[in-house]
Amino acid sequence: MKTGPKRVDSGMIALVVIVLCVGVHPVFGGDATVGGWAGIVLADDDKDGSLPYFDAHPWYLYVQAKPAEGWRFFGEVEAEHIFQFKAGKEGAGEFKLDRLYIERNFNTRYNFRAGKVFLPFGYWYRLHWHFLTETLSRPISFNNQYVPRHNVGLQSFGTVYSGSTSLMYNFWVGNGPDVFGANQRTVDTFGSGGSFYLNRQLGGSYRRTVEVAGGHHAQTIRSDLLRENQRSTVLAAEVKYDGLETRYEHYWHSFDGRERLSTWYANGMYWVVPNLAVNFRYEQGDDLKNTRDDAQAEATAYSYGLIYKPEASVLIKAEYRVDEYKNPLDPRTRQWNLFLAVKY
Amino acid sequence: MKNPNTVTYPLRMIAPILCLAGAMSLGSMAAANQDIVVVTHTDTGITNVDKIELGRLYLSVSRELGGVTIKAVNQSVEGLKLDFLSALTGMSDRDIESHFVALDMRGEGRWPPEVDDTEALVKLLIKYKKAVGWMTVEEFSELPERARSVLNVLSIDGKTAGEEGYVLNR
Image (cartoon, rainbow over all chains, first blue to last red; front, top):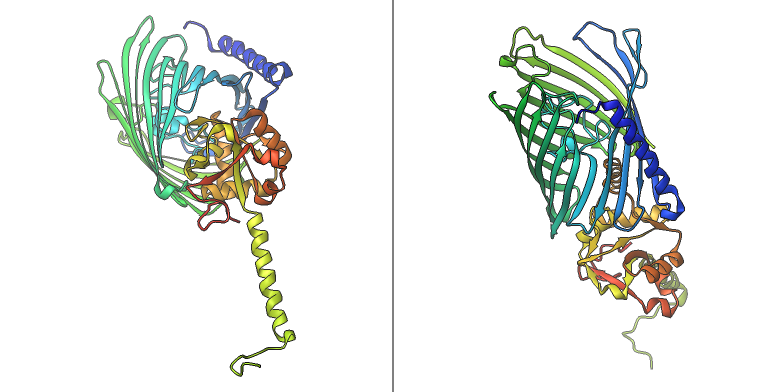
């Protein structure tokens, strides 16, 4: 697709407005809900010696509508860095479409979506950061975008249940923006893949679950200078036992004529009391985005965090993170952040 | 002739005990009346449900019950709604609210629709048929006979309200 992001997004934002009108209008059932969430960040890192900065980021507004039985619209716009004060400077924000799709629901087992959706690839990609993720900082794998965060195309999904076991599946095909090595929409991409989540409730409890997940995505990137086939795979597991929640994700990524990349992280979170949790994440992998030498891209990161939820719709997080690199020219970096978010 | 082995007590001595036993019995009956029953239209053919399956339906992660595509309906009595979901799923109120916040943000689902009271629920169940709702035993017993005749009170994991091990006993 040769179209620039601003033009595409403004057209899609117009569609969200149409969806809102359709959802609210009584002729279509008037079954629309409008919601969203907003966050503010106070953060600092020692990468460039700058002062701590304050960032109103992000702000989401979404609308859901059910114009007819078995049909659903979902549209969401995002404003990033609405206003930012970094080392005394103020920057302008970006307003864009995050998701927009129409969904056809047949039953729990067969459903289809068409539009712009999150790619259901492993765990982190399914979460709507930063409200639902444990940390504000992203794992190395996600930061390097081995697979696109979004898919613009078709998706089929469903869940099959058997007693206390469930199997959720997804298949997709489409054009994913922001893919690895091609952060601009000036290149064509085409990708397809699938994923699964196999969940077992222990003793029938919703607070004691074991889940394994996997996914594979293949894509072709094409521009005037480049034509490349990429493949990504994820294997993951998640165990929740009362207040303890642990997760492991391992990503692999390969592309034509270059070496295979991989990253993994292990995360442990413990709810000390119902609304306060401590979190620790350890990760290793090829961090091409933050290292100067692709041949020595190995990095290690530790992240310590606190999560406080005074209400289900209010979130306060604090995090301290250290990144270390194999390349001696890449210095060890430290960063911290405080995050407040409210869902409305 | 009075049996010499029989011990008799003046009424004033046993009256407090009788009153206490009576109060406990009435309290137990009152508690049983506040047990929650899950009801659906007889046309669905559902008479017994699996607790986990019912929990998934009310957590909006499934749309089926007993092989039937069906809509879960809540009554908008805030405390009672959370009591019902908590008893059904074993989750705390905060876990339940966080679950729906996450579903909503992901665009994967939302709270089941709500009605104001039992009367509205019964009207909805009779009109739409493929819906399931809940009410207290007392509310169900006060329904007109013609309403009760078209509703199935569902057993959960083979147990009915008041029975030992019934998940929605209060």
